[in-house]
Amino acid sequence: MTNIAITGASGTVGREAIGAFDDRDVDLTLFSHSETEDLETTTLEIADYEEFVDALEDQNVLIHLAANPDPRAEWDAVRGPNVDGLYNAYAAAVENDLERVVFASSNHAVNMDNAVSGIRPESTVGTPSIVRPGDPPDPDTYYGVTKVFGEAMGSYYAKRHGLDVVTLRIGWLLTRDELRQEVADRDASGERFARAMWLSPGDCRRVIEAAATTALETNPMVAHGISDNTERFLSLTETMQGLGYRPQDDAQAVLDGGDEGRDGLETG
Image 1 (cartoon, one colour):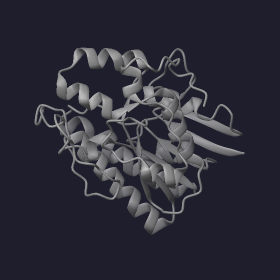
Image 2: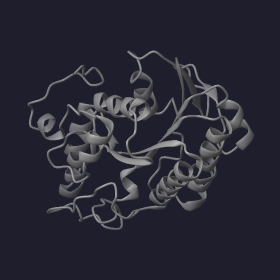
Image 3: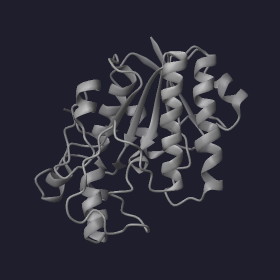
């Protein structure tokens, strides 16, 4: 049986990651920054190296989701969890002879040219440039900078220590109702961003399960984690070919009223 540790398990993506293995013969160990009433987790301070090393004892795979997730955060708020914590994740994985780390990166690592932010709020109007995993990083925030750091750290540990590393640039995880509401509340550029970056709950589970279990032909691997959105500008070709990911949802279909699936219960 494979032992999989998930940090940030009580977060939105973390909860989908748990569901990703419902039909797999795996043993999950769940970690979160603080206790939650509705989910049984072990608290973990990821900025504490020794604590992280102890947490990964007897694990085979680490899905590292824990971070400060705020794209608007200043440097002092992200450098502890997103830099020191990320180093600890990889170092602890090697210390415990883990086979693989799945690192949750973000579209913000490559999104300056296409960003919807206070810096360039107009830039998804028109035709955004296609972004492929091998393109140079182009972070749009300090948060994005920390994700570029995490991707570089993954490359180092894959090549220097032989660790399997999958970096997932995760899009915007929303239920169908949340997607509709975000689009209704946003201007043209914000609506375009939502249509491009949507990751459905079902596709989130699919891409995380694939990242954690698929044999890698390329290591390290950087993959985009979004749904099969008609208006996407993050390439999915590499994720589909390298991980066998088969997304089943499309923001366009949801917003056009042609997709009435049940959020979080997609079965394909």
